[in-house]
Length: 197
Image (cartoon, rainbow, N blue to C red):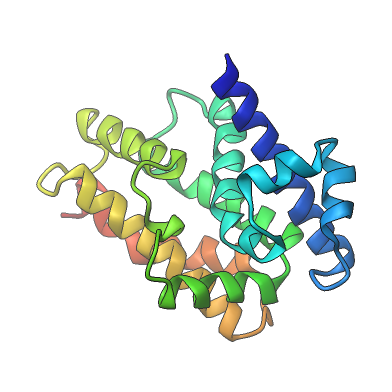
């Protein structure tokens, strides 16, 4: 029970921080603002984060939270590939509407140079577990090719998402991320379909 409470506290802090970063900018957001909006305490904040900069790497938690929210909405009968495309569209809509592009770019740059934990690549994240689950289900149903491992296909999917996010960042968000991904994801990942081998 206590673990769930800790996770909830951390999620509250992360969600509040990214809402504030988007609404008023990273530089104009204080730790006190984050604590007030999250309804937590200074002690809780510093238990999870050693400062505001540490929140930049927490974007992966926000992505995972979005996937957790979307999971119950997925129709169990939906084609596995279509599920993946739906999740991508919803995630990229959230990114486009709630994540400041400069902070997304900062996250990518810190992940390139960090010597420690690379949150975006953590295979134990909800993000990877859910994607693997959908791929395995698709393989069992004959919708996703089975001559490649579920881990390889999940990694390829995640790599395509990162590539599209990175490209959107270096283009300074001059186009709609969701619209572009709706065209590019099926093109880049169509080989995953069992009937495209």
